[in-house]
Amino acid sequence: MKEIKAIVRQHRLDAVLDALHAHPELPGITVSYVRGFGRARGRSNSEGESVQYGTAEMVKLECVVNEENVDSILELIQQAAQTGSFGDGKIFVYDVEDAVKIRTGERLQRLD
Image (cartoon, rainbow, N blue to C red; front, top):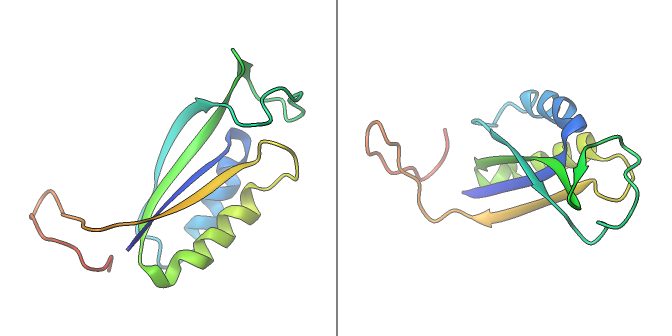
């Protein structure tokens, strides 16, 4: 299993979620509102997003998926989030060593 974390612009959230809802193998997603800055922190903000104290408001999306779905989900996120401007965000992929259902204690080998 793999965990995908994506940091995207807030105004692209609906487009990204619409794209992900269309993926038949996506088990779920967590959305968090975050603040941060990257290397482009000194550039003007042409997207109309709130910038305060040198940080921008962004959205973090997190999901755990089976390995065979990683590439298709990455492509959906990238296409839906891209504006072509500095600060569009990043996508990270991590190995998931273990997963446990809290309700049953079942250890998950796959997300089916």
